[in-house]
Each structure stands twice: as C-alpha cells, then as structure tokens.
Amino acid sequence: MKHVFIVGGTSGIGYSLAQLYLEKGFVVGICSRDISKISDSQKSNFQVFQTNVSNYIQLHETIESFISKEKKIDIFINCAGCYTEDVADSISYQQAEEMLQTNVLGTVNAFEVARKIMKNQQSGKIAVIASVSGILDYENSSLYTKTKRAVIQIAKAYHRALKPFGISVITIAPGYVDTQKLRNLNANDLSKKPFLVDEKTATNIIFNAIENDKKFVIFPSKMKWLMLSLSVLPSALLNVIMFKKAKWMKSK
Ligand SMILES: NC(=O)c1ccc[n+]([C@@H]2O[C@H](COP(=O)([O-])OP(=O)(O)OC[C@H]3O[C@@H](n4cnc5c(N)ncnc54)[C@H](OP(=O)(O)O)[C@@H]3O)[C@@H](O)[C@H]2O)c1
Image 1: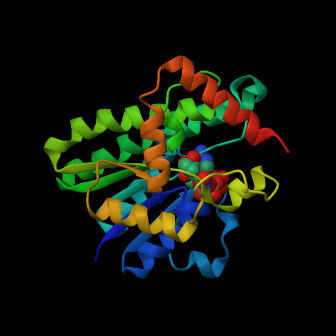
Image 2 (image 1 turned 90 degrees about the vertical axis):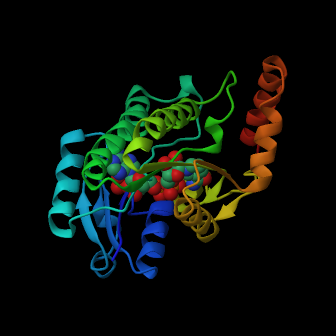
C-alpha cells in the first residue's frame, strides 16, 4: 500500500487531492492549522493532524507520528498557502508575516522534514504547489506573487540536491482554480479570472504530474502559453501590461 501526506489537506486543492488519493487506494495523512473545517465522518478516512507548516518542530513531530504508524511516505505534498488579492503596500504587517511564514518558511520546512524521511527510505516524491503568478518578474506584483516565485526557486534548489538520493521534486504552478478560498476573496465572482479551472480538473493534473515525476508543470495550457509569451517581453512592456491587467481585474 502507498502512503501520501498532504500539508494543507483540509480544504480546496489539498482536500480534493486527499480525496483522489483515497480513491486510488493510498493511505492519506493530512494536516492544517484548523482541522475543525472537516467533519468527523470525513476525518475518519484520513490520518488528520493539527499542524502549522511554518512551525518546523510541529511539522517534524506530525510527520514522525505518521511515520511511526505507517513506516513510510511515498509522496509528500505541500499545498499550504496563504493568499490575498492585494499588492504589497495594501496588506497589513500581520498578513505579510503570515504569508511569508506559510509560503516561504513553510516550503523550506516541508522540504526539510520530507527529505529526512525520504533519505532514509532512499526514495520518494516531494511536490509543492507554487502558482503561475510566480513565473513572471514584474513591478507592482503582489507580495503573494513574490512568495510563490520564491517557492519555485526553493524547489529548484532541492530538486538538484535530492536527485542523488532517489527523491524527485515536482513543482506545480496552477493558474486560477475555482476553490472556496478564491471565491471568498472575490465576493463569489470569478468572472475576471482567465482560464479558470475547476478543482477536479486541477487535482487530476496535479496527480498525473506527480505520477509521471514532472519537474515543473504549469496549467492550464492556455495560461502556460500566455505566461511563456509574456516572459520574453522587455520588462518595461511587461510592467505596463501587468499594471493594466491588475487595474482591469480590480475594476467593477
Ligand atoms: N485557488 C487558486 O486559484 C490557486 C492558484 C494558484 C496556486 N494556488 C495555491 O494552491 C494552494 C491551495 O490553495 P486553495 O485555493 O486550495 O486554498 P485553501 O482552500 O485556503 O487551502 C489552503 C490549505 O492550506 C492550509 N494552510 C494554510 N496556511 C497553513 C499553515 N500555516 N500551516 C498549515 N496549513 C496551512 C489551509 O488550512 P488552515 O487555514 O486551517 O491552516 C488549507 O487546508 C495554495 O498554496 C495556493 O497558494 C491556488
């Protein structure tokens, strides 16, 4: 039997992935800060832990506890992420701190705990959920965008370092995914989210990327080609386009 552990597995993309792995016959461990979000009947399908990814000791203890029972982790996925809709100067210090701790420090913590277990096993896959927004480098981007750019870079470093130990690193950069969190942030109106995909589609793409050990996956494909086209533009032009896009998205 195969074992998967999903950090941030209690809602949205993470929970949808947890359900898919369960259907595929995996033993599934999940964690997040607030596990009351899922019902007791849902909890009974998984091993559930209350854990903050930005707290290394807590995360380490959680994984040790999962391993002491299950003996191994074949796949470790970090879905935990903190996002808002705002640019850098319009979020509070507390929001910025939470975003940096969850998205950046949390990514490092996830790699650190997973790699220790997987080095002993001499096998395993570690997947991280970045964002398509982290692909482009432009002015006026949100702090969230910068943290997801950091996630992509951190994953690259671990990809190289862990390869000799039989551990693969898979980085996923989704475009807009129709999750409750995204809806809550946009007053339930996702009409200005181009190439939006539903949770199930996103989950299947992520599952297949992990199965096939893809190093870096951007989806949906229309978003991927748009990003790749924008990435070759001169930075001054890219800045103007992205500024106009942000203005359009905020307009009613
Ligand atoms: N939806 C999109 O359009 C989209 C697009 C690109 C990338 N992403 C990325 O995909 C991931 C999931 O997004 P989503 O839309 O599914 O959001 P979501 O429903 O809010 O899921 C986030 C999950 O992470 C957990 N989490 C957050 N902070 C945590 C922390 N410090 N420690 C442990 N768990 C934590 C949340 O539970 P608690 O709050 O209870 O801890 C929740 O289970 C995020 O990394 C996001 O940046 C989303």
